[in-house]
Image (cartoon, rainbow, N blue to C red; front, side):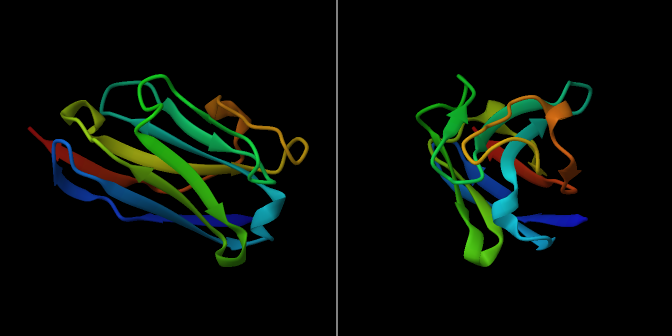
Length: 127
């Protein structure tokens, strides 16, 4: 069992930056591939970024590629999402998730692939 807690959400002006953190308790964090998703009210959950267990592979959605960076610190049991050049359309709730499936360099971009989820962190970008 893994518990995930997001932090770092907040209010920022367009063009600004935020860094989300997702701290995990439970099993060793390096046993999990990690991902970030986001979901606006009334919309489906959307893939944002993913990182493999080894940290050597990452993948981003087209809408955030080049602006967001996912990274992990297994010693701190924490995965981060650095968000730069934020736009109002990035306003939503962000969720971290982990899965123990696959090998060390596998990444997952579908929400159904993930086993554990955090409760979410709200980001608001004003124009």
